[in-house]
Amino acid sequence: VQLQASGGGLVQAGDSLRLSCAASGRTSITYAMGWFRQAPGKEREFVAAISGSGSRTDYLDSVKGRFTISRENAENTVSLQMNSLKPEDTAVYYCAAASVSYYRISVDSKEYDYWGQGTQVTVSS
Image (cartoon, rainbow, N blue to C red; front, side, top):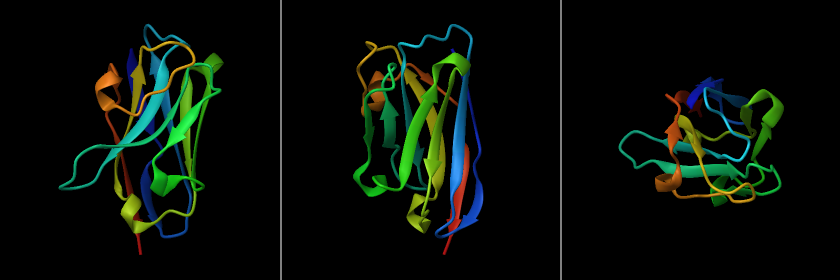
């Protein structure tokens, strides 16, 4: 499975961005999908996840109410809508896929089998 993330950029605080992740290769709708981020000098952290079914989602507390993860299984894509961006959201954002059961999600990066290359999000104050 290959994952291609896109949509990052430089924005001002309060602006919005929509990240997309396109999956190709041996894709499967059973894969849970997640977004993680890594800021300079910090460890990679979980941001959001969605089950293969799309019925379950989970978010990092600091992004709840601002970010929304969604998926289009027919198109093998997952998106992260980011609103009300803050400077502390600045990081490289990675999409990832986990071969877990259809209704599961995971916030643990160790459960993710496939990773995209990352897309930079920079939020200026």
